[in-house]
Length: 548
Image (cartoon, rainbow, N blue to C red; front, side):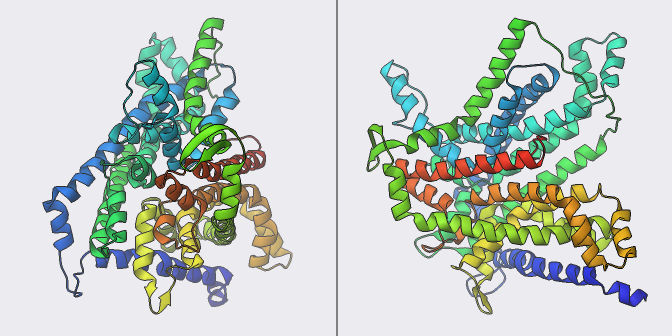
């Protein structure tokens, strides 16, 4: 009887999922790792790593990447924490609109922000020309400062959302006790509130750091001479002179090691100081004096508006008439006519690949969440690590590892739609697994046991009873995976061919060619799709807006 139970439906699910992870995640990454130590004739070598540390052309990109990520994280924290405190502690005007604008900016791809700021602050940008006409020379958006600006506006919402959630969960009795002991507001904030939310700030900061370290599109579009690691890895692999797969692999390993190191340090520091508390009495929002309420509301709205501005810009620009790379007077649908005539394949590919990927993500995530949550053990812990590992792998690195693995026998996938779909599933599945696991942990196991006691098999009981209860969490996670998938650039730009290019790839290539009208029209399609998806997500989550 025990033997029969051991080899049940879930046993075979576990085996199949581990095989899929082994083939499409572990083996490609192992192949990437071995390639970084493999010379041209197949012999073991440390040449690529030696070159990296020997030549400034290579090692300076690591310093630049870490500098950009560190400064972005600091500035994002300086912006995000105070905004979150004002938003959660005081009653303001238009709070829901401000929250939605901030979340929407987080869910759009960074390269759209980079493109929009080129339109506004580029050498011939709208704001740049206006300032020049009144005698003000404003720094160009290109280079180091531009990357910091785009990353900060794109990523500070991580800090804002994490800290807002933490501040709403603090038991008000802690702050009340500090106040009763005579502590001032500033002292109460520094000695009670801040230490309690410090692990949450660290969690948000690590998301900002890793996202900026891994991003490819923004530095590629506006970095110009300021080259960072992901861009260098892309150029090494895609070089017109034949490429250097070994050097690209070595650079990819260094990126992953940096991400892992930062993640482990953050976990170590936050585990040393962690606080638990009752959240039965969350703090109530305080009413401000009318003038202060207006000022705080305007401040929050201004920051949220600047954050959301790239989405507004691409939609407006998409309707401007163009003559090649030059915008002419008047509005029209010329850019949309061009993209539906010339780039219809890219649009179709984006929604086709993303839909197939989401269907696969839903099925695999449901089974994975069940195995991680209900079947406790070493294998489940390992599965959880494998699911979350793609968070550490930048998209460009994943793309390189898949190309190195599947461009030869016995399984040639390079250049096919399947390799794009596999990359999307690997990269975006954690959203759905996490949301499914979260709701599954809240479901009483007796519900499924009751169905089994009535004669249904464990498998049928799970799909007929438990999955139906899990559906809101599954769909919410799937929508977030969908939004992230249609906007994916870093892995797509490594894997695409002429027949498999997506909207994000087309936006990138159009911006490089200075076809800003068509790029804006394509970006508008992604923006509108993202907004509609977010509305659906908000309805399903019953207004509990959270994406982290």
